[in-house]
Figure 1 (cartoon, helix red, strand yellow):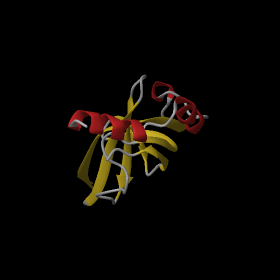
Figure 2 (figure 1 turned 180 degrees about the vertical axis):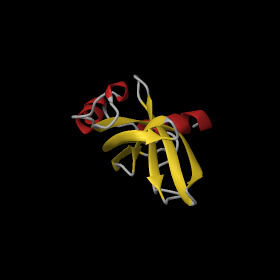
Figure 3 (figure 1 turned 135 degrees about the vertical axis):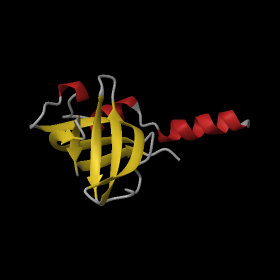
Length: 117
């Protein structure tokens, strides 16, 4: 088995079936439909992560994207959240607000759907 074949098999094992993914994302809205100062439940893939100090406290900031757009997901006082890394698929829920001039959900409730190796 070639390294590429092993990589593709591993990726396919992490990908939920379409019906499972749809079921897990039931009740979510597209990210572009999230509005400031309203509660939102969105699903997507973590595109990027960084640790950024905010008011002297380490803060883990991630960008969650779907086909419609992206939103920042911010975990205050955290340098790392187990299972969250680039490529992780997750559902987050919380109040949409502002963080550094961008639309964000601070300290969201979250559910990991698929975590890359």
